[in-house]
Image (cartoon, helix red, strand yellow):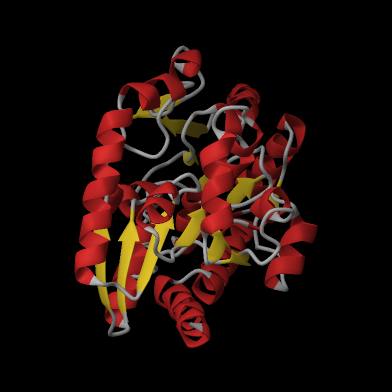
Length: 332
């Protein structure tokens, strides 16, 4: 098959393209000049550039005659509707959790969903947001390169090291993570807690004495960063595992995050091997149990990697995606 993916979100397109290519398909990738998650006022300012980008991408798609066009981010389908060709639409998070309920931003999402020949959701919680519009939406697990995100030597350090592995933005509930960090540091002096200095909420937490900040690194260096820690704190709001948590699990790290275990059992057939906590008290309790029990850290980490290998390895996910493409082409 000749396939093109348009735009990338959280490196999902990157790994799907790699997996599909390794399966023998001819796959291209193209990205608009502007990111998918700009603020409304900025989107307005760059509207002419976005239109030109769309026309450029549509020209490429028409010239190359791709069998499959796959857009990432739920508002991207306007290009397919403008170009009058079939397209798949991939929803990733805020594009439906937030944009579908915004009086302005919902319209391109609604039109994109309506025009798609197939819709994918990247986490189970997203189905509730699109079900009334696209009951046929299919869950496609986020792909993780488990060859890169793999256990490495943890290095030599005396204290237990904890990483808040999330972008600091409201949808990740950083207040819960930092509230837990403050209590943990005051009660346990032999731990170190770090966060990555990124996200729109960063300045709110810069002065938190209990947490040290590390600068963002290229994605290719994240396995090195993750493997230098003993415990990972994820997001505490949406009830699903994001890419950051999955990458940490692939590195055999025990993860504490807010996950709807019932929902995951329904979609996966088994819950993820993490410690689920959604409020500060529960996060503190979960982390203390990991601090005190090295065997628990190792067991949970080992189970976490096995679970990601089973459900999220990029080649397995790409194989599922290729099957969906073939079903669509067979119908056509």
